[in-house]
Length: 257
Image (cartoon, rainbow, N blue to C red; front, side, top):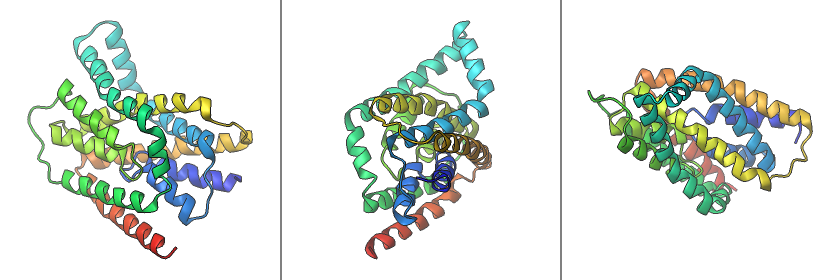
């Protein structure tokens, strides 16, 4: 992999990790359609850690407030912290038992494209949700979002789109749904990276690692800020058309060989 290819994959990861269009699906399609080879497990970890840094920076005040609240045993912080744990358990178990199966699906362009159609449908339906008057993260809502995150380990199913939409369906406000979705992403991304570290072969040049990490972090921060703005404005469903278009392109490319 050369620096340009590394930067291309990092941009794809940074944009699609947070925009509701499935980062795993786009990385798989980038490798196939653009003839850009993936960097293997190690490079994948680097890209995800870059986007994880973007979440930390963007939600730094919320993260530090949550940590202070837990230390001081403030009720709302304890509830939110416990809910994040509850919401993380399903995806942790799924990754542990089905990780290899899910990874193999990334090579199946028909599955990835079909999953993108599902993502687009979820996003489209999210636009039909009417905001409710009983906001607040609860165990039930947190578990619902956690289960949605579990489904989103499938390539082509957007993690951010599915979890935010589920939060909206569960009764969270737009801002709460976005915040909880990305706070929930922290243990999921970090856990996945730690799990895969022992299996990664770190033979990449240092320059490639730096490019992948920095570009995915910077682009990821911009994508995260953009998505949160779209969510607050109730425009999440607009991404459905993009997902459908990419899915059709992927299926067409597969048929054409």
